[in-house]
Length: 492
Ligand SMILES: Nc1nc2c(ncn2[C@@H]2O[C@H](COP(=O)(O)OP(=O)(O)OP(=O)(O)O)[C@@H](O)[C@H]2O)c(=O)[nH]1
Ligand SMILES: [K+]
Ligand SMILES: [Mg+2]
Image 1 (cartoon, rainbow, N blue to C red):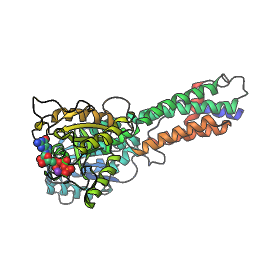
Image 2 (tube, rainbow, N blue to C red):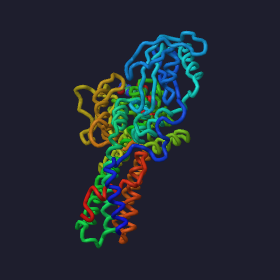
Image 3 (cartoon, helix red, strand yellow):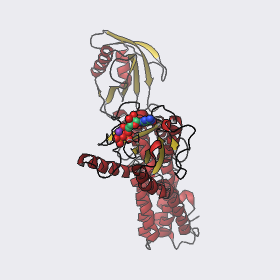
Image 4 (cartoon, protein in one colour):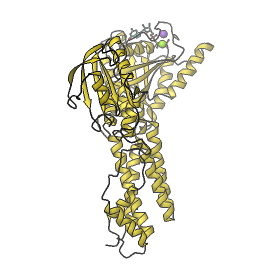
């Protein structure tokens, strides 16, 4: 017991430490290892190409290529003549930027060369860098890996950076930027801190339970913290699929009876002739999938065979595939011919597909459906509208384009519900990995509540916290002692 107290006092004397360190366990120390270089802008002819280096020999390489004794002022663009150190031959007049570590992207000494983007200039500068002792070409992702190892980015931020580079739509860019800004990471760090506190309370009770000086109600406090965390985790997990859909694309499936104009709509939305359109019913048989940007959201749009019974073998297989794809849809675009609503195939479609999806209670995981009545150009302007008993629907003419703006607006709203709005609300979980760790954390909290034994309860909290630190790529377990002392006084 007294030895324990002494250790606590010794820990406290070292002063408070940051709880949620970005530094990964086992990472090499900053500045160690080789200096790497690479072309960081795209391949091929371009106006300006950016070549960068990272590592301890960066400054040396910059001095050698600019044939200068001094380094340029830090973080300022300077115009310099670059020459090949072996032959002295001029390579380019370029802007150079010197970023001494740790105030750089990777945390190491870095240099950026902004050169003219011709292939000969780029390869000349790369070869010149390769000839400098201590420099070698970077491997894929090595700059970011060094930034992570040096605590410049945590794992979720690294993922955000990768997503930002790959973002193709506006909504994807917004989501990636938020993750790169560290929102998800900060949230997890906050949760991990809560667990560290709860664990500190439980461990203090294990160590000093009979000690009169221990504050009362420590265990109740830990229980309360765990309960609040469970609620927060549950809310995020309910949201889980949306961020992933936004990252990889929502599945939107166009379905309906033959000849409703499904393929015409797919071609209209994707602005290219993906599917064959013809007056012959049963034209589309295979599922045709095309990636499109719909109102800023990434979508995998599928055209499918018209649903009908009693047709030839090939079309039957098409209908089977269409139904299968329909089950995977996040959003169903159900299409009917507005001028043909009384036909058996239209009535059957309304009674089966539309009615069954419409009957689902609107939870986050349930499918959503938009009913579209196409060929509105065939309705007589003075005649009665479509059947009065229809569920909510939109009128469209793929032929004239009338109603397309309304459909796009409706799609935007539906997709925002399916993918989540990346500019508002809590940060979304963008990968299965995030969901796995949050679920793991929640499960461990369940074990905590069930354990009668305090040692097992503490272990469950450790497992729960481990999931959160793994989510941000961090490690470390010692911070707990700091908390014991900072949060309440043992033996005051
Ligand atoms: N008048 C009119 N005709 C349309 C409209 N949209 C499509 N069509 C015509 O309707 C016919 C069927 O169109 P498709 O796009 O092939 O219909 P589909 O639903 O894909 O048909 P299947 O693949 O056979 O199930 C074609 O002749 C189109 O030109 C529209 O808005 N107005
Ligand atoms: K057709
Ligand atoms: Mg078709």
